[in-house]
Length: 126
Image (cartoon, rainbow, N blue to C red; front, side):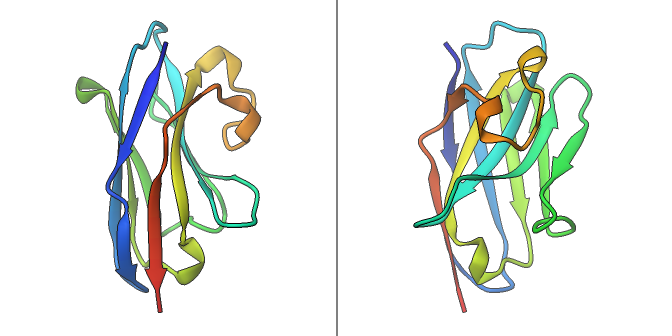
């Protein structure tokens, strides 16, 4: 069973930066897609960024392109999300997600992933 644990959330002023981390364990497949999602109160959970662990290809939602960077460290079984130029609308609970590569047909779609972390809160104030 894959387990994911996020960390790094917090409060920051608009224009600031945060780096989220996700540590994974229990992998049994050679390659995965891993992703960051976020959910603001009263809104649907939306995909933010994803990465293919087998080759490093990355995918971003239009709302974060140029501001957020997803990366991985396979040696540490870790996923990261560097968030720069944060806006108040980035305020949300951020979740790490993962699933084996053969199962993920759409990288930023919630239904593509079976494994989820518990989330970490990001609050951006004006």
